[in-house]
Image 1 (cartoon, helix red, strand yellow):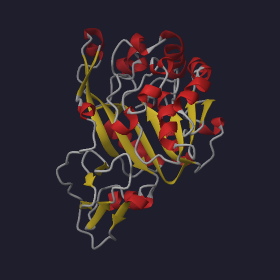
Image 2 (cartoon, helix red, strand yellow):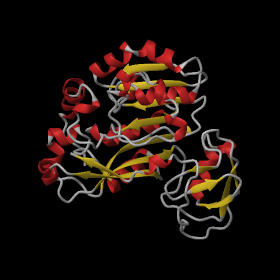
Image 3 (cartoon, helix red, strand yellow):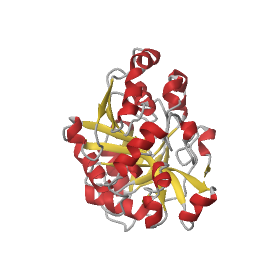
Image 4 (cartoon, helix red, strand yellow):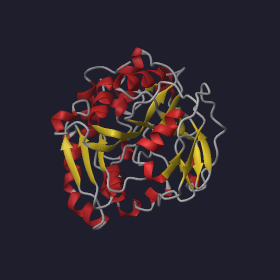
Length: 352
């Protein structure tokens, strides 16, 4: 399930010395995706030296971050940390953790200039060195964080079970994990999991989706929801031969620290989005299967109702009380999001 124990030293070397910019990547698994409008409007404020060393595969910045304390796991030079700080505003705060000294040195060297470029209404960003498997070593106490974000980093960790347990520990009740990473439709062969290029380029440590579900459950997260998926195709012949049968996706997923059921059950509930989030006035994307148009009562599962009423989303939704149990939840066909940036719907990214 996990990648080799020497992965920390491999990743430190790869991201600290081998890669000087995103142009040095040998594949495009960490290719990034188009950002939602409420995030992309701030990209012009990000300094070139920060953008050039961005190695993410998704957009792990949910709406509704205003005033939140945010933890960015594997922050690198800090592009997502700074964007999160702008979304959180001056009443929020961001703690950015990375284990690679060179990445943090680069982040700190442009910190003052980057904060000035973002302007006054920006949360402070606190860069800390440490392992995301051991957040106590970074001074992070239990139940101290509103939202945990991460962008294509968990796959690089040799002990993923410990990562998710630490995330559960530091989140406040009702807090959210919202992260992007590379996932696989099966467990990778041993050769692929030990290949330094595949590991460094975020494929060798890709989580088998079912193992991801199990690890989350063991940590305490009984339910999770996929928000965005992008198909990854490996075209380099030598790399493809090592992962011949494996299908990869970049996925953004969310999970909340709440006492949820391990299946989606139906209690006849509805949720009505009040349209009160500035980032998504027309409707709210809960997952790839659930879109809630503003002002419209939509049937939701018991878990979905619990998340919308028991997290930071509660002021923005009118959720009905549960009625008699009606069996397993049967989701309706997904509906389009009119607030979505059309460029964000790209469905494939080529690797190699």
